[in-house]
Image 1 (cartoon, rainbow, N blue to C red):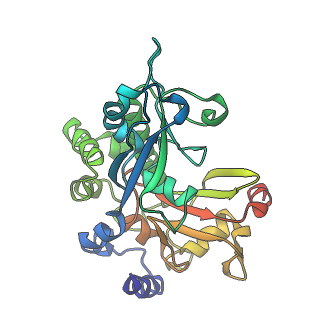
Image 2 (image 1 turned 60 degrees about the vertical axis):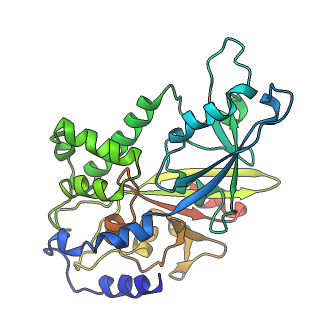
Length: 316
């Protein structure tokens, strides 16, 4: 993707983008497919303390789009392991962990992987599935009672992203019921092309109309002896500077979390990831929104940093 780096820098230097129709800034759909079409091979094992059969069951392998969500796997996981677990008259409380870190079901799988693993993703990526709760590990997980919870969470996030961009969710609310269903079905199937067709109806006319790019900054730090920390920051991200030029990732970090930078570069040990890739700091935010956002319409930037700097960074 080196050719994209050259493109990023060139677009950031355009004298003024205020009145350029946003549709003219969208590259061919193949660019979005390259950035958002990544997949992860998962090897899912049943938690050892929940095995109720004589032998440990075989793991379940699944090739999962980065833009998908963990609950999409719940049916297949239950079918695969149901003969090896004991219900004991209680409803299942299904959740996943990676190295004893409970994974939040309302974020895309790619965001979770960027956060807890980083750039060097093992193949397969080993996850553990649980069918019983664990208050010490799952205290930060949102309650989940069915796919309706996921649909509500993702669509609310999408509506929030539109509100951040335009200052109103009216365009989203005006979608016809069949368009809402088309959008949700595209998310269920990780269908980037159909998703983009619906998304196009909700876009700003130009960047002057756009009040903020929808960006979530995931601050992640882990230490094998001290545990892990993660905060998710939602901060205003104007697409343009006062002179009309495109604001970049550097501009956003300077605004939202200055300690991540030092002398205009990333501080020592910090990396910024999106869709499994290190993001060049001169990338325009609007470009990421158009071509590398997830299916909740958010750009999920993951900032991985040394454990010792986490508390100081977040407090500032």
